[in-house]
Image (cartoon, rainbow, N blue to C red; front, side, top):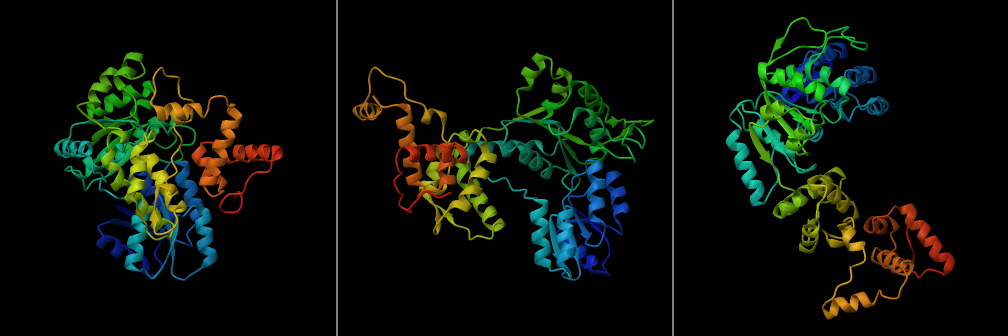
Length: 451
């Protein structure tokens, strides 16, 4: 982890610097925001910035935003100054850290802000095979193309490869090709000289130079404009880049990793992705399976997210019941690990008692579960009886019963019921008002319908 300290505070930040170094961080220190800005523009990147609270944090945040430099800031001060701390948070700082420094507090805050968790949480044979292959190819400098659906953990695997490589102590720089407008991507990758275009107020080194001697991850490479792909190909082949507005090429030494949630061979056939760039990136292919195909990953991942969000919300860490795990494994996970993380965050907030049971696991309803079952020529007696309960009833009547039964299951909690039903709280409220106008609604076990 790279820590940049901005300010002095009579030696107190020096003590914080020593604590961070003892915890394995690479630390740089500078006296003011202008110097810090210059360092970041020149490619001396940081994962976290610790800034003295009386620096002009708002101006610093604006300067970084103008150059699209995204680094979390932690404000710090010697005295407990509530007003200064509040102003720093409003200006864009993520946390306020009181000084003199407490070793455990600094370690906890740095870990929380930087989110440098390098372990890959898994339990499935599919992921074990993927990690074994990643470890085997990590020592080389070969380009790797990591493919898989959104949310499967492609960037996590890319970081794993970097951490197992000979470049592990050097920078790991990720560029989200889907998040940066096409007209800014060239400057983001290759940098620019002062005055190269309107708004280029200072010289800026790009991600290639920031990643020099380390690893550059081109995240969702399929989203890159085809016009820029030729320049990217040249940079990878020649190991040199041209800054926008520059007069001479700059040599670079990096390893390229790329990810895609699309079929790049299909994109090549469509003419939206260069074939020569595809072959250059795809020296080694590392496909990631969907979470629904890695069911044994779900229990350790779910437990990890429960612990993470319990701590984040100041709540005790509850255990997951076997029924909750069974329910999680029954879901098809279209959003993969990212969806699992969101659902476990919600379960931490919804759970009651000493455990997280199946009632706290609020899964979106599958379309096939809500659609009427097609008629069949042969059915089991149980299935036939179930269908006969619906025959002769109107859709409105069945919908009313489903909504009220779900509300009763949720003890009248409308928010929870709406999530289970897959509708908005506003739609649910309108439905209930409609039913109540026709006839007074029954009370639930909790004594009424909650908002």
